[in-house]
Image (tube, rainbow, N blue to C red; front, side, top):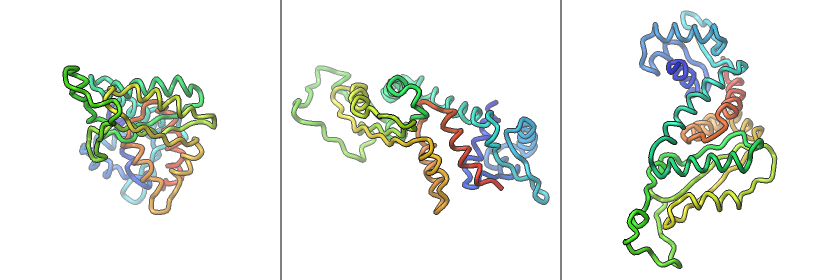
Length: 241
């Protein structure tokens, strides 16, 4: 199953969404025969479309098969679960954030992605929160943190939401309570509808759509895995062959 997931994900790196079997094997660092056999197995399941072109065989994900989004969603869910299982401050904040969005937005929520994952993953509990004997700063003096500081508390969310009233104030207030007392987090949200996201991913000029997807892909999907990849596949469907 893991190889199937890796093969499916390999196509998402290509602006066209199309790869030859040789390219897939080289990209994943696996023998050509292994790639050939698994791709044809996926083709028999309808996960991949295979089109002969000369001696090569061009392949692309089949966006009309519901299983395709499920395979991609499984890979993303595995990555998220590994992150959430870590005994770290970022993992605890991310877990609470996921639960908050699911509770506050319920059936309106199509997906929530934590964008600044690399910097967020390095967030540490301040020493004075671990050791109360360390003198805390005055209550009226906010902590100054550099924007370039990897420990700078920041939580930037990309939210895919059906049209509804977004409870921004309630969510921001709740998210701030997940951080240690001595940190004053910067919380931002970009809220789009599924149709707006599809339009973003469709954008062809300067490969803006593919760049937008790669930005989202570098984040951590907290919820809405299959819904998110269903939208992605709709955009990729126009780029095949």
